[in-house]
Image (cartoon, rainbow, N blue to C red; front, side):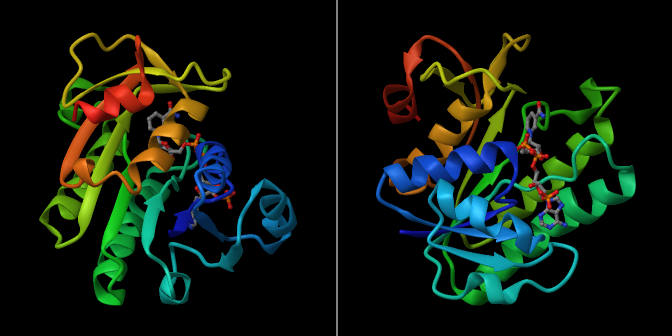
Length: 212
Ligand code: NAP
C-alpha cells in the first residue's frame, strides 16, 4: 500500500516508516522541511511531499491508499498550536481524505482522551485529541484510532497490552512498539472501526491486535 505518513519526521513516525517499508508498503513522507528528505529516504520512504497542516495539503493525498496521522504540535509549543495542529490539522487531514477518496485512516491518538477531565496538566491537549477522534468516528472513513500511554525511546519490546480502555494506567510504551502497531494495522481489516489503548504488556503484538 502507498501510505502517507503525516508528521513523518516525528519520533514515532520515523520508526513507522521503517516498519512500513519492512512490511512491503511504500511510505510517503509528509514533512514541512525539505532538508529532512534525504534522511527519510534512507529510512525507506518512496516519496516525500512538502506540506504543512496549517495550510492546504491536498497535493499530499494524490495516489495514496492510506493515511497515518502521526503529527503533533509537541509539548514545547503553546495551546494555539494544539488547536491548529492536533485539533484543526487532524480534522482537515480527515476531511481531505474523504474529499480525495482515500478511505483508510489510522490516527495516532493518546491514552487519556476518553475523559480529558481526569487530567490537569494536559487537559487541553486531550480535549483536542478527543474532538479529532470523535470527528474521525463520524466520518465515512475506514478508521482505526490508536491511543498509546506515555511514550519512551527504549528499544521495542514487541509485547503489548491492547484494550478499548486499559484500567491500569501507570505504564508506558516505546515509540518503536507504537510504530510496529501502526504499520501492522494499516492493512489489518479487523481493526477498521476500532479505537483502542495500548501499553507495553505481555502479549506479542500480532497476537494482541488479533484480539481486537
Ligand atoms: P514528535 O517527535 O514531536 O513528532 C511530531 C511531528 O509532527 C514532527 O515531526 C513535526 O514536524 C510534525 N508537525 C508538527 N506540526 C506540524 C504541521 N503544522 N504540519 C505538519 N507536521 C507537523 O512526536 P512523537 O514523539 O513522534 O509523538 C507523536 C504523537 O503521539 C504526539 O504528537 C502525540 O500526539 C502522541 N502521543 C504522545 C505521547 C507522549 O508521551 N509524548 C503519548 C501519547 C500520544 P517537524 O519535524 O517539522 O517539527
